[in-house]
Length: 273
Image 1 (cartoon, rainbow, N blue to C red):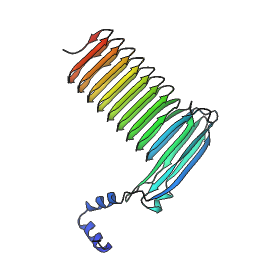
Image 2 (spheres, rainbow, N blue to C red):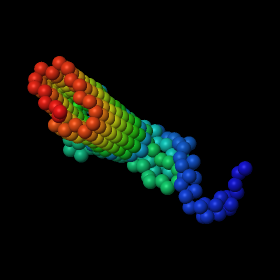
Image 3 (cartoon, helix red, strand yellow):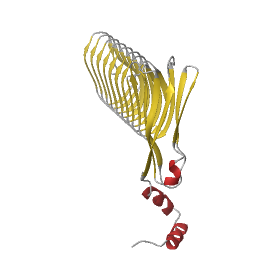
Image 4 (spheres, one colour):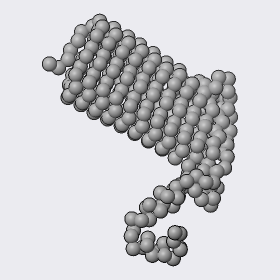
């Protein structure tokens, strides 16, 4: 049975919480439109991006002299669609790409965005929600709100502040620093050292040329293998710790609960008893 508009208005006024359910029911993406922007990046050294709701992909291309942003705007209402845009400009040696997505109190609005950049460009910025992929860039400094985050083949250092969602980092030419709220972490192939803090979720770290330092781990297992330097776990809340194939020392300063297993550690081992 379909309610008449007048009757529906009466029900919503009598039951305020029903309005929230009406909004969720209408949060589809029935209206879409392409978006694109291009900026000259010859001689540029940095990309700064700000992205809101929607998926995000950033990838580097050798020899490219432009920053090319394109994507699909989507909204549950056609009247909102024109307000979803990509802003792109260059100031000095920095290229800025920003998505404009209006706040909607009824329905939904998002922009799925792809940015192609010169492969040696340093990339930094903030992403709101949705899955994010970054690959083949010069360096990376990213603040990610929620959704999965996949990073691969970064030539130099990587710094990640991640709210929630799985995090995968494969191939970093410098140091890696992670501050993670919740969700699983996988790290593999780091030429420098790794330093991280994690709220909850298991972590797997392997093939690191330098040191591995876990400053704080709330909950979830820790597995660390094939480390050229030393491994230090400063504070572990709950969950087991497994370490093997470490060329330097292995130290656990504080361990809450969960077993500690290690094998083939060439340096000194210091763990709580």
